[in-house]
Length: 317
Image (cartoon, one colour):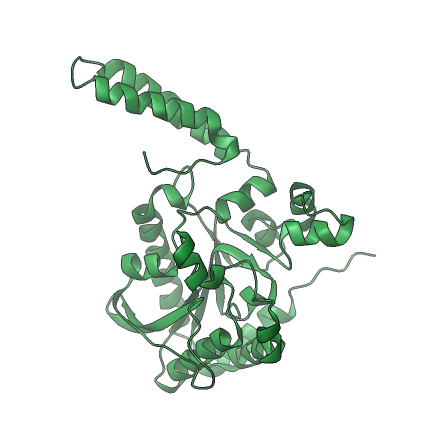
């Protein structure tokens, strides 16, 4: 509780939970069991009220929460025997993308995902989860290795977007993303994609072409960030809340558009409140979807994946 980071809209809940914590300390000297139970019940009700009526902007804030599980957290909680593999064999090792061999329920798989940081040093080291071209080329190298050894691929998406720096452009950022889209479409092994936090534009899509695309309940997926959208439309990046409503970027919105296949329910209050609980739910979803995909031939996977992405459009006249 002491390490819990609260968002602006959670302030009433924060005050109540701090009161519960204070009573917990006092209960060492006197019996306050009934009072604490009453407040805990009210806190649970309040949490339910807050998280059942979230705006799209509030959902985006949860998706970016500093304590939300990142790829390495899921690798520790859901998989076993993870061995990280580094480098793109062309330029260097991008720390904004991690990947390697692991086991899911004892079966070998290749896992690739964006990695953010929590403290300042780690954020800089991970480039705030924004990959350079070498990150996408590393991801592709690992996915091609999975193809060679007939291993299923699981990717975790959580990035504001691909890094827009001059160096990234000089080294072919757009080409690296485009190549990943093309190559992932043709892989003959099962690919499961999980949007765990922010799914930002091509930076997300570069590792998100899959047979099954799952999305955590309080994650977001959009062609641009709300702030970026606001800056373009209204020349005012502070209108992010207004842009978020227009973008329709929540899991519920994206499911209605058939862009994703499944919404993974999070613990009440968000995945950042209970890493173990969301890991168990995610584990079940991955195991179930992988079992379904394993029965398909490589040719069938490629054809169904192609058709899946071809039909992702809506025309209004």
